[in-house]
Length: 109
Length: 119
Image (cartoon, rainbow over all chains, first blue to last red; front, side):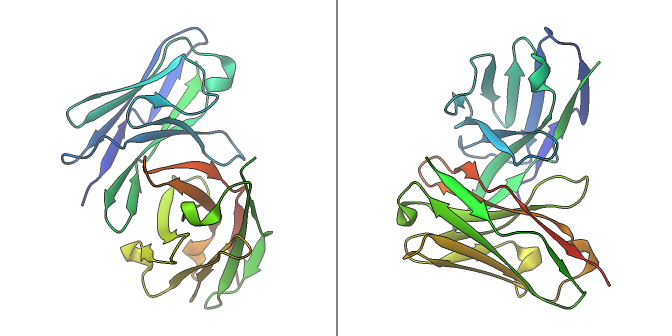
């Protein structure tokens, strides 16, 4: 069973700072890793797919990368609207079965 | 534009069943899958299951097999999630989400449906 472990659980930063969120897979996985942003009272929104491709309309300050089973979401310079909860997600089997990380809350310091 | 519109909130007693609908529009329904994801109060996202929009094939999370049924009506672009034998810990917001098969992600989501299980 693939488990996605996100760290840190909470990240406290100020606008303008750089944020790096981590998602570690418990075993080797494909490159179909995605990141989602969720704000209070809203549905999740797709940010990044295929490790590093920005979804439609997502600003260039969001980027994704991979090193082995470690995946990262980087926000180069935080805007006030970026403070939210972020989830990574991976398809782990066929027929399709998906798993999410437990989330990282990005809060204003 | 792509839209997924879900049915309204529901209140159920333990042991009852709930059926949530998801109306898809703005795209070819049979070219994409629909996944259901739920979120208990203050918790993270839990994947529940997948249904193929073309042929109705399904797969369910192990923890929900036997209680969950996903169906679609391709002629109307509707997807349905039925959960039976409801328990208090099934209280959650339930989301439908369109799956992009080629890239295995959920690019559009419904607004969510709050299902409350209470006696």
